[in-house]
Amino acid sequence: MSLLVVGSVAFDAVETPHGKVDRMLGGAATYFSVAASYFTHVNLVGIVGTDFTAKDESIFKGRRIDTQGLERADGKTFFWAGKYSENMNERTTLATELNVFAEFKPRLPEPYQSSTHIFLANIDPTLQASVLHQVSRRPRVVALDTMNYWIERTPKELRETLKHTDILVINDSETRQLSNEHNLLKAARHIFTLGPKALVIKRGEFGAMLVHQNRTFSVPAFPLEVVHDPTGAGDSFAGGFMGYLATARKVDDAALRRAMVYGCVMGSFAVEKFGLDRLRSLKKTEINTRARHFHKMTQFTL
Image 1 (cartoon, rainbow, N blue to C red):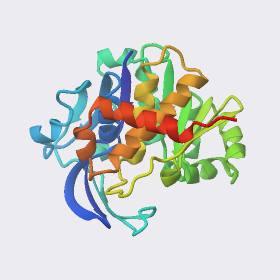
Image 2: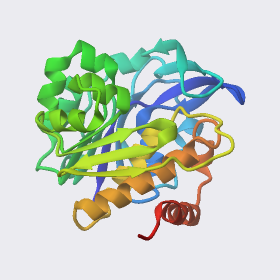
Image 3: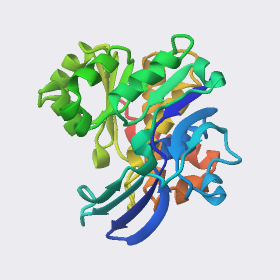
């Protein structure tokens, strides 16, 4: 099995109530790749500038991450800066500099074109569709992330791409915006008419919710006393979710439920330190131990 991710590799500047970092490695594809690599092999497609050094790239070394699809271009790497509120639930974007990412045109190296699982991170839905046009065979699973910007600005293109998507991974506000339904179950029912067979709703401090085949499954957020940096939580969740799913023998209800737990596990580790610092030093035994904690938290008898 092989897992393909297409998305941003970036530098972030982040300020939270627990500190400030002026420059650290980030980007959806980066968090996703590192989180997913604890479960399976990852093919990474993205773009970086000349300021992306060998030291920066070392985050991918020694892991099951193939960077053949990481394009280098003249100019600077995508940069984002943001500041989080005291309660960590709201953030203000201070700067967004697309730089070389503005000209990103995903190109899949030949070995990537037969990837069995594909995750289309949050980019222009036209580019997401272009990735699917390059694959040589129908993947077992295509999952997609998007955001309010694309829902508002490119609704036609997004809906066309969703026709070829199996799993949609978005947050609760995006779910409501895309469906024009406040109730999440009604929202899911509408989204299924657009193409996806399953909806994963990221709910921040409230965990995550899965809806598929008239079934629902919710996983709580792991209780942490201190959250240092929520920036990569959602993408790390997606990495854990898709990373586990790529190892499953079949994509059934049981596999999706376990994938949800491992997604929440990886998201919970990501927020414990700034940037990728916690994921960088993580051990598989810690992942398994925390997954067992999730099991204990949600287990009960009638």
